[in-house]
Length: 110
Image (cartoon, rainbow, N blue to C red; front, side):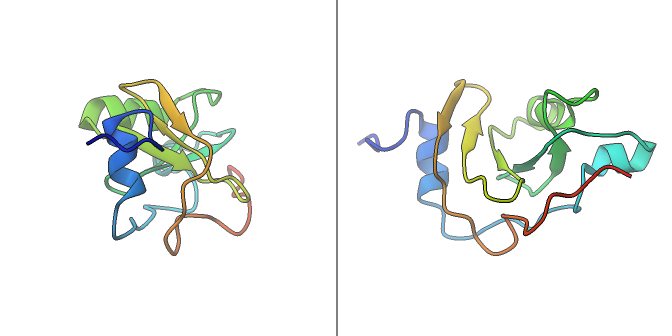
């Protein structure tokens, strides 16, 4: 039976997960590797990859999602708790974070 709180099956799955992911870095791991800058950060809820948003020049979070078929990210910005499903273009306004999934400060590009 579908979860009435979730607009798609991928977001329903993350609503009912029993463990968190460990962020791969405190900034966009791909931008850090090439010395690039980012605007906002996103956390892959499948593997913990931290990537930059689609407003960033390199759009590493969505590239990672497509390349790895990892559907759901959450904001990796302080004070934000939303999640987004790439394949279904669906979102949740609130998704509880496990330890480490919500950063205490905004991490700036080097």
